[in-house]
Image (cartoon, rainbow, N blue to C red; front, side):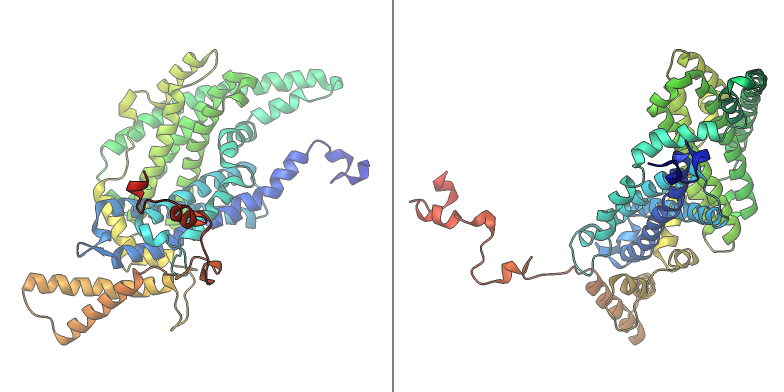
Length: 482
């Protein structure tokens, strides 16, 4: 291959990996997460409506605790992916190609997209596995493994690439130290001076991170312990509190990243550690993206509850990833690094691990917002295809049926409470809702699975020869033949 064929010419030799990853930034950071964003919008819009339309024991399944849990998880994961996508799109639109952030988006958002669709499948149940025009979940479920595996499989991205690249690229002093090592022999003296200077800065940076991690950890723990469970309803307090928690987690992560240098070149083989740190970094980045989304879209009724649910989950994810890393820090200096990490990240032990899953009350509130007409549902339905009037389209029909079914349920509840007969208008409303429910819970029915089965005399391959073999037996039933 002639030197002239190298992209960028001879001076760009050795930069192939950089160019490769920069070219992937749009696909990894925008296109693949966009699939998860689409899945989130579809699940909230379609499955959220289905859970209110579908009844079991004369009660909408949206009132069942298991359904509420799955719906709330799908909704908060959906908000996280949408928020992350908004920030990433703005970064790319600014003509930047951040390799680490695009890797975080690819791995984290596609994984959340898988969870969202799985929650939708769990809720929709049988209607999600019967193929046909009425199934709006099956294709998404089958196509998700593509996003998980292409352009750097999630296992490789999580356990190697994110921290493998980010630890040196994002450190304020490590890049200059490495450049000093690559200087030619003629500049050796200058290189040694730069190396020593940057090494001292790295040590000082680590010490600063240690004390910053301790102070922020204690402060964040105190603010978590004294916070009311309904404080999130005030938007300004919501932003201030969670920004403080993310600053604490970022300080914990920075200290942990500095401790990783004790592993030297062995770090690239410690993929379990790098995977946990990738989880923490992803949760912190998406936490900031979620707060940014709330600040931009605040005013939407119910957005505070959904943002609170998402932030509590992200903070717990980051906390648990860092704690698992401290419990399993590898290497010859692993016990020392583990002790320093625990002292810096969790100075008061379990007391400084204050983050827990959202309360049941908050989960029920989020589920209610996602399964009844609300501004939150309108936000998720932005960009969702809506079929024209008269066309048969399951997603559109579910969305249109939701307010009718909710209103009919309110009327039925009122009738039972007041112990009276319905008016003619109420009777028509309940009858219309029942008819919609009956139509929308049906699945596609086929006379034949394939065109071949419709042909006269067709016998399934598994049954070929069975009739002949039984004809040669003197037994007439399986029990006798056995």
